[in-house]
Length: 329
Ligand code: AHN
Ligand code: ZN
Image (tube, rainbow, N blue to C red):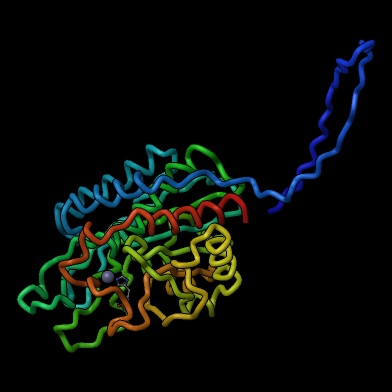
């Protein structure tokens, strides 16, 4: 939203020439360049600490003590920032029949506002490093610093800011559970819909009856150094104007090296179920590498998905872009 500012400046000019004493008042109208009100500043150090804090619990694999402790932490942080907090618990069935004690953690700001934006990320971490170069570690849980914690860390920083300075729109932040318990590479059984279990549950059982939002934005793997966010295909299909608006905001802020003006692959992710289940147009901001075998960074689903890959500059590019969208577009 552009605002033109017209400033009427009055100058009281006092002449000081000889034989003066005469007072002259001059009025000038100054038309400024069009300006956008600047969005609040996204603090990348703060976001980095939120990522680090999650990783410090250990892998957030459902049914583990680290998972429980981190879930409590996320709910407590959202509450501290002034959100109305919902904790949605469910027992979900994994690809191998394991019952997962899952919890979606939800924070609503300005809950009575009819105009809403939904921001989401998954907070669980993968139980398997099934893409690790060492097969002996394919069943080792991962830190998930990027895959999981980065999106949540960026959203916690946004929650802190939204709690301080209310935007015109209501904001819902959902941390989905059990996104990353999908069928591992080392089993050959095919289980449809084994990923994104928390989002699938929420889409059928929203925290508020008939919940809707103008649009949704998913953050997935938004902390890696030199990340590249391509326009993901399902996002373009369901929400092309939102993709263009977000990529445009990023470009205007100087983050075009992260937000690539090109189409990437179609990715099965939490946004898919929010689109299909709730009919909300959603986009996925996800680090995508068109030249890699998996489509993702080399450390994806390996033991190397740890804090060493987390770069404040990437968190800043994503977080500041989101604030621009929330406050100005
Ligand atoms: C699949 O691997 C099918 N989709 C990627 C979703 C994902 C996993 N995002 C993070 N981890
Ligand atoms: Zn993953």
